[in-house]
Length: 477
Image 1: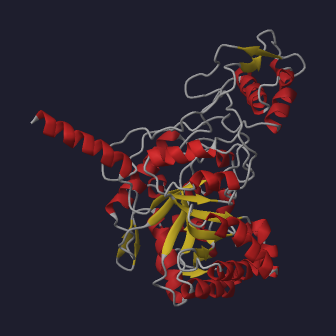
Image 2: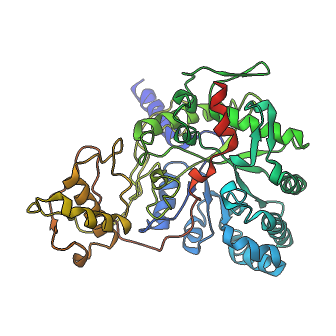
Image 3: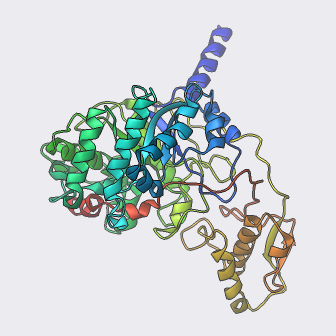
């Protein structure tokens, strides 16, 4: 009997770490000043049972690490390459040869993401004329390589490509300024049996409007539902998805496969960006995926890529300071909070961390205790933050510190970013190196990791992605 109980326990542990919610993947961005070793990251993905990953480029060391892993991969093409790929089929052939054909048989490539949210309103039409020709050339080159049946080209769009005149999902339609372009792409996707990829961020609903009912951004049904044609929407995620479905129906593509290319919640950099809210969002999303309940208009399993894997300290903060804190793992590969990736209650434990991470020496750069006149530190603080990441500083964030603490944090961030070069811990004689960890409470003064590569491509600052739909939906509630 004891042996049987033990075997059941072992089986439950295995299921908790390997039975992910159906269709679950992660985004692996690389806009960090210090990169984790790709092979170690891939091993971590395998340790956690993660079988799908979405990239923003096709960097060789990452692809090499994924070779033989069995992990399904969506490789990406940055927006700045779209023009060349649109203008020259030979360029598209070369790109496919170097980034797809080269890896056939070793890397399980499922999709090629042509651009990243190229129709964002903030781009003012920069990529509107080049996205479809680039998509067409890439798919043709894939087909001619012999991989057309297995690998499909698509375009990850932001939710701002569709809107609703009444703010109800049933009135969803594509933006007028890009409607013809969207129909052209939709026709191509249908003809090539490729999915429509969209990025959806309920967090931005809160960030955009202080009037937005907070609980509607989560999945627990704590706010007044939105009624639309006998359907009650209890969260903005479902409402957003069904707005897209209705937009697709209106153009004759109601049965098109949909993939959620990015969905996540940041953990710092804004009053609503914290560990508690991120865990609440992911708990609800994962339970939803685990039930395979879909949305009110499509009651079937969803394929969703969580955004993102790691914090990225080189991302633009023009949209908001939270941009550098989307990771479910810290910069060093340590998990931030417990997650049940199965969504079935098989355990709510910390994910397995990246193993074999090398750190720099355990030392920190802080403000010298002899400095008494804090007004003299302002210029040095600003200089440090201009060259490093200070987005955790501020009221309602993880590092809500006094002036001395803020300056010390900024000095250390700059020092660590420069690989602890002693010459970078001076600041006009105001700084000193200490072996005593100055971290306090939830505020981590990091020790940087040993760098294994240069920053690469990642997701665009998603706060630029304020969709018209999200901007109007709160008025319904």
